[in-house]
Image 1 (tube, rainbow, N blue to C red):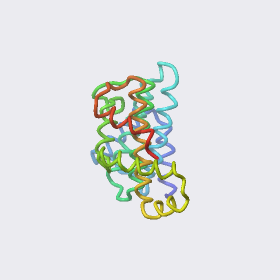
Image 2: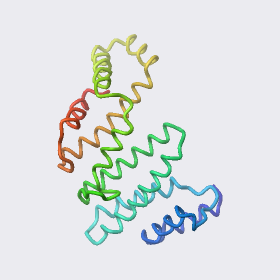
Image 3: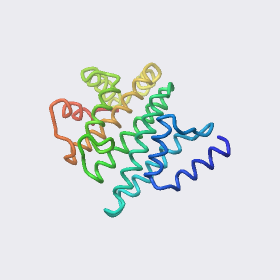
Length: 205
């Protein structure tokens, strides 16, 4: 990252969130140039931190918190769409889901809001599923039995052949935990599909 990009980002983050949001809109509309090697991830992470920090404070900070969160959501989505590296993309999606969860818990759910609508978390979860419910249930059962039996040789062989599957199931458990938290805090209405998925959370490795 060059010095110009670093200085620009630092100055940008000192502005009011509404001004940062206006700058970002200008960039999307090709009315504003961005420095070479601009640190988009740094912008997203700092905006998310500011949003989370302000959301936990008094009512007067809530609007600023929400604007910072909107900025973070826009940039996380932009980065996720433009990342070919699967692991990086998955990390961005999880950051986005966790930010939305925290903001919803702090500020409440709000339909059609780009940050506070729980439906966006639900759709993100289902759009990025790697396995069907039935396949997940079967795979989770195999891993649970494997670890319960605790036979080192069998565990070693399974890890060698199916490590990616284990990673995928662990990732699924993290995301299911977000859905579970929304349900437990009455931020979304329960339905059969969601409850079925959440019911297998504790069986996932």
